[in-house]
Length: 65
Ligand SMILES: [Zn+2]
Image: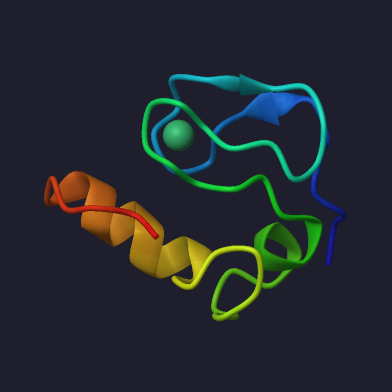
C-alpha cells in the first residue's frame, strides 16, 4: 500500500490543504492522520470515524468527529 502524502488536500472535503500531520481541517473537522489515511477503515484513532465513514458523512452533510 502507498504511504499517504503529508502535504495534500483534505481527503474528506477536498477543500483544505494540510501542511503537517495531526492538523485539523477547518472545513470538515477531519484530523490529518497518517495511520487512518493509510488504513481508511480504521476507527478510534486521531478521528473517531474512519476515513471512509467521514467521507460518507461529509457527502451527507453530517458532522465529522
Ligand atoms: Zn476537510
